[in-house]
Length: 278
Ligand code: SAH
Image 1: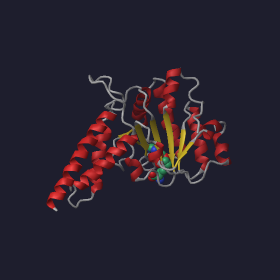
Image 2: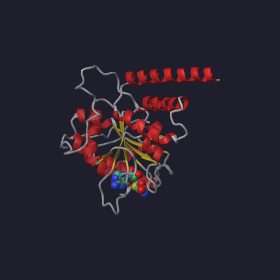
Image 3: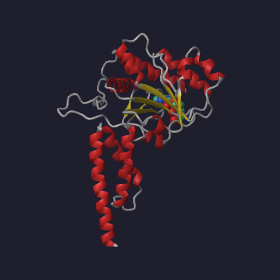
Image 4: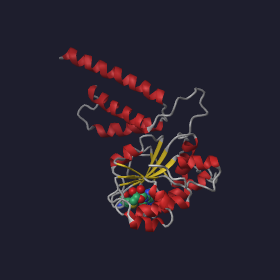
């Protein structure tokens, strides 16, 4: 589907182009009204790219009513079957979670996350801000696809915002960052890894997309099995940690190719050793 042209008409052209590289992804939304409210939340903040992953019900009249004039954003929403499909071309994927510290992902406030997202988009990368289901949020496999988590530091005893309200808070911080208004997050652990490394001496290849990294992770998982790395332990924990390492590394496509070459050789050696031992 086409992308709505409603993005940030009041922002300078460069910021509007950056805004177009930022998409908000709603996963498995249960209430069509929330999809409309999210469209409205985006449009009020000058954003326009809404992506739906397997919504329980397609947008309907209730969605349009709650979109309240943001129908263009709603109409232009892309629909995908899985989160992996929806973010395959992304350089940075941030997953919003109501439950703090539930995942072994770096956790950012919206204020720390927004400048990171905007920097990655300004550097030419596609960026996704992902929101979960009203009842159950994002599942662990979906969070695994994210580079970091965003948690709105709400009342710890009542921390779950309405889906569209959470979209509004995050979209507002993105707007501030797009307007260049966001101060660098004081004391944050932001290492700026989402920005293209203009400060490194080596010229960089194209940044790896999410799909490149998922290919690397699939091959890494196979290799670990083939070299019997886990020795009977469940593979999930090691894979989770290894994913974090590689997601943090801000790899480019050439580096992914190099790593996959190393893995291919390890797989070849393991097969040879297997034959010898047989
Ligand atoms: N009961 C669910 C809450 C889902 S709220 C759970 O415990 O996960 C629907 C979505 O809104 C969440 O998946 C998340 O993406 C977003 N959201 C709600 N509150 C949030 C918060 N405090 N910080 C970040 N995202 C939040």
